[in-house]
Length: 125
Image (cartoon, rainbow, N blue to C red; front, top):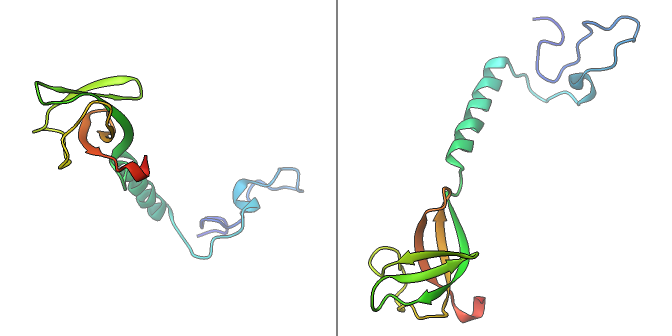
């Protein structure tokens, strides 16, 4: 292995008389351990997988308001100007029944699908 073949180490290849500006590895401080292209490929693959899974969280929580309760048919929720129908059996996750005007927390998947609705305590409003 030649000098400069390890991650983070400077290389003298292509530097004749100092006319070539320093490359990024020469500017950055050397890494405290050796790494090779296999390590970097593994690291890149792990980051790619985590990016696709959007780890650590997969849901988004937003505040909304109940427009219509679900006592006589489907309820209606508004979050950021968009309306979402809901039923007590599918999405409602609180013990307290929904009422018109109630502030709630809506949980969405990353693709925008409504997953759950929970009441918000008055103290946190």
